[in-house]
Structures are given as C-alpha cells and as structure tokens.
Image (cartoon, rainbow, N blue to C red):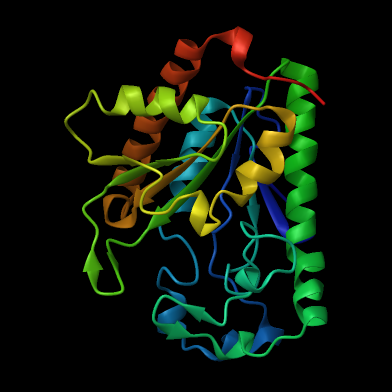
Length: 258
C-alpha cells in the first residue's frame, strides 16, 4: 500500500477520503554519505532523530480514514520537512541537549542542497495530493501526526495529547471540544509546542493558503510504544476527527480552492 518516490513515501496513495495525512518525522534514516551526522546509533534511536510511534499510528489512521499518508524518507536531523526551506532550523546544530556535529557550520548552499533533495519532493507531493482531493472530493482536510517525548530537558510533561493549530483553529476547536469531554487523556491546545515554536509550518504552508481545515496532533510517545497502543490511538483519533468534521459541517470544509 506504499509507493516510493524521490525522498518520500506515500502510504495508501489511492485513499479516496477527504483527509490527507502527513508524518514529517516518520523515520530516523540517515543516508550513508552523512556519516550518522557524527552521532552514535543509540542516539539516533531517540526522539531527537524522529517521532517514535508516530508512523504506525499514522498508517493505522490512514487505513481507518481511507486517506493517503505522505512521509519523508529521512531523519529530521538531516532535513526537517516541518521547517522552512533551507532554514537553519531544518538542519539543527543542536537538538534538545545534544550537539549534532554533522550539522555544525553548514553553509547556505549545503542547507539548500538538502532542501532540494528532501524538502521539495515532500512539499510537492503534499500539494499535489491536496489539490487532487479537492478536485475529486470537493474537500481536503490536512492532518499532521507527531509524537513527543515524556521528558524534555529533564522536565516531565504531564500533557498526553496535543491538538495544535496555526491561524485557522476550526478543526482543532472541534477536536478539543470532543476530547475534553473524555476523562481518559490529558489534552492541551498548542502543547507541548505551538506556532511560536515553528512547528505548524506544514499547516501554514499548505492548508492556510487554500483555506483547508487542518490540525496537527502530538501524542506522548510512551502512550504508543507497541502495536496495540498504536492501533488503539489511531482508532481514537479517527473517531475524534470524523466526529469533529461532522460537527463543523460540509459547508465549512474549505474557505476557497484557490
């Protein structure tokens, strides 16, 4: 159910529902020529290199929603596709408390080269898929799936599920209203990160210009550490999203198709 293109993977490419999913930090893969960015293998297994558990949740959710899922095929330490083209944040010299030697003192040309190889194919695939959904379904809803570590810089995070948005909060508002009625999860708006941290780049770049409903979902990764938890979370998210979409109503699925 997956197809590979230059620098990206599209799971369930033939999905016919209105949702389009992305998982920008699905893998910790570092191409050989980057020499592990100067890091040991154990560190590349941690959250600084990817979002543990996010990919299997996103794949299960894609099946439940009959949605295409678009994923870069590279660690965010090589090129973070949820950051602006060629920016320093897209090739971080430091992640949490760790120095990234392979990203130290990169030139603008080197950052641009990584963006052309990894970022641009991802952006083109997302844009193409959203526009196809608009043409075939009359609506396209962008949902990005991420996970976060329970302890960051030595501080525990109580939040379990983050519902994030940028300027357009319609879908996030509807999801929050549903989730907050449940007693099972500690949920927060724009937590543990928010637009001021630059994490809503995909939403801002793709959904806002087209007036599309959109939301970013952050899941604490200790809640999705095995297959059962991942599938269970995907089912829960599918219910939230479908109920939220129904509550908004079909008339408000897009503002424009520009």
